[in-house]
Image 1 (cartoon, one colour):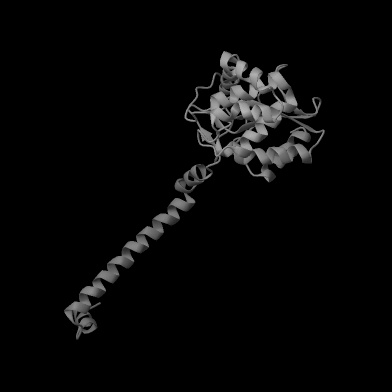
Image 2 (image 1 turned 120 degrees about the horizontal axis):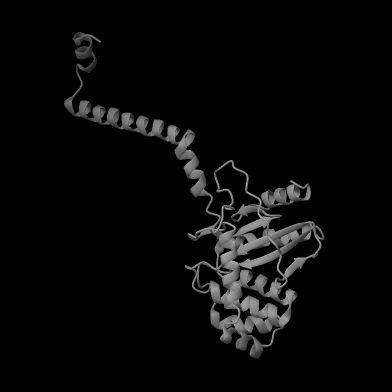
Length: 261
């Protein structure tokens, strides 16, 4: 544009209006830059990173794995590595003991994502009755103050009352805790044990002896060895599903296991 045209364009415009127009042009320019950067982030690495952190479906704890069987991480295309997880004689199985699909869930009783995930697992047990069995293993996270004692409490209930009482106790903890560390008061554990049919005296004796602490730590260490780093982590016939995935995703994983994949 020639100098003559420029002067014609702004001729008759007051200095105040010229100043305002300059500000508007500047804001428009900055907005355009921000918009372009947002597009780049959405279609590039920034978008993928956002997806990884946006899941928010798992409580994490840095744990060193004992081998190379760590499950695939959210946001990657790598299939989870299949690991050989044996069901121990001292575990409380929910469902048919000879079911073709085994779900081994590493969970924290004060984890909000585990609480959210629990109904989906219960629904799986209903929808696939006779086809799946569920083993709950303890993985109390260090930043949940009540989780370890609650884990020991569930094991005491199982010892004194068997598998049915164990699972009833687990269900009630998830129903009533508000999670995030101290959602269910430790002082109420004996009353809850009695509610599911376990003698309070025997329960208190088991808790005071700390006899179940070793079993809880065994679950924790074995889980770390399988690559578990947060809760919930569920192995479906040895393949890890990380986080509180939607019921539809959980069903898809079960269907794959039933198909032998």
